[in-house]
Length: 390
Ligand SMILES: Cc1ncc(COP(=O)(O)O)c(C=O)c1O
Image (cartoon, rainbow, N blue to C red; front, side, top):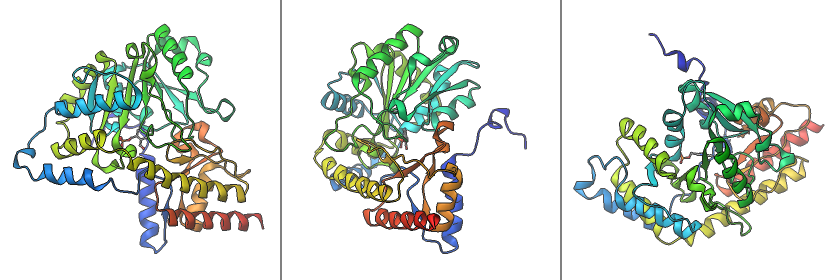
């Protein structure tokens, strides 16, 4: 069999590979605690499930459900943006539902990047921003997110020749993996840079509603004139505990929405109707349960912070998102630390380098596990670190 040249440079998806090793350890009897993958462990509330069941029982809801999402779903997404961010969107031209935001993110390069164009990607950053670019033979330029800059990129430090060739800038706040957040003035500077250099800014906000200590995350579309240059990706995966359902959205610049929709309508056939109906109920129904859900994550965050402090591993206290981003102990690489922790204690975390070269020296802990399992994992981490000191 002959394979396409373009996949020769495509590395295996990190979590797919890690999953195989974990399956093997589990088969050998190891009790693995997965703090690597960012999937919520809690289900959505009953009223969302009831809508899924109701809609699935309708015999007319099993055919293709349309390419652009049903109008009521696009309207619910626009209503969510108005309620949550005060952003007004035209549901017919500025909203396109996605089969999970990863699907839309992976298709961005197909719609906006020519061979040899540059895509600016955060480093560390969500790997899918980079991978789709490899498939269209574009180039990625890593924009460093450093602790000393509170994990915000220094946009003015991007070389002029790179900016000239750049088609897309990816940003993601609240940030995966660092847990950093960005304020509106940073988004204003980003929109200004994008205007000057004719860039499409793709802002990815799947963690906008997973927040702590009263923090409220903004949308980049709150910036005046942002719709000229911004396409924002959002998702029900983390916000509404619906990661496996596969429903998200891209919203903002109408031309960009249309271009992405053109790619999508040629490649997929939309979202299962009952999932669309349940997503409408999630976005427009009672939101009060999110407060309780976030309180559960916040408690887990604090359990992890106490354990890290006990063993002298420094980590910022995130205001949002599902992750902590501690430094690895001195004298060990991220990959060795992650693999020793897994092999010796059964605790699976993600080496920072899975997110880019600036992830070296860090690891990521996800809060998407039951609180008692997080406790157990932290006990094992503390033992491991104390043994290593002896
Ligand atoms: C930053 C970021 N963007 C996008 C996604 C994809 O989310 P989904 O495809 O489930 O909407 C994830 C998932 O972990 C993520 O962390």
